[in-house]
Length: 104
Image (cartoon, rainbow, N blue to C red; front, side, top):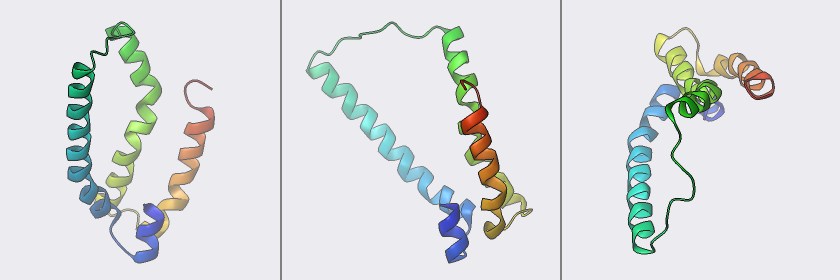
């Protein structure tokens, strides 16, 4: 999306915000549909629910991916980085998190 924004000279923040509400609506509707289908077909729970400790460990491993849109939007809203310059600043962080982040 950042590449598209830089080529078409669009706002990265506007593109992210333009997809937020439709994505949220689709996600919620898919969760509702999955809930009713699983109740109708009597799917049981295979695993126990994660404890708070397990949830926090998973969150710790995923925090970099969860922060990425916030960082991109923050750079755009702040005005410190134009869309054309955002990709060269963003990809080293992406690759360093992917290859040297938690779990590697």
